[in-house]
Image 1 (tube, rainbow, N blue to C red):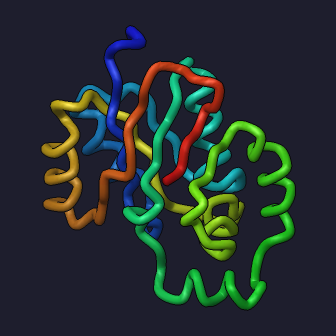
Image 2: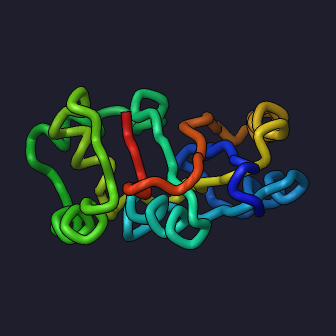
Length: 156
């Protein structure tokens, strides 16, 4: 993939197994795809950015969250691995000042499971999302990539 050929990032909801979403996605020009597990969203996105020699930009307001997620985070119900993830991957991430501490926890949370982070060719993004949704797989576009900068990830 050429650096000038940027991709869109989409995430499927974290309530489903990945098999069907992966099958749907593979009928498109997918450049990268990873399931979000023990390293959390920002950990996995950092790894994709590093391997692809690109920077990733994520809009935190578009992230699909399970009901109560931010309340649990606010109350301190967080996994111990969250701190490890933040220490290891945090140096690669720029977080907007508008991101609350509870959302920050969610972004680095290692407990996330079931969702796919899919990077596809921009002209395919909307049709990919439509096909996922038609298959009853909730999916949203959460960001895009750009040429590699000082930071692998920017979250606004």
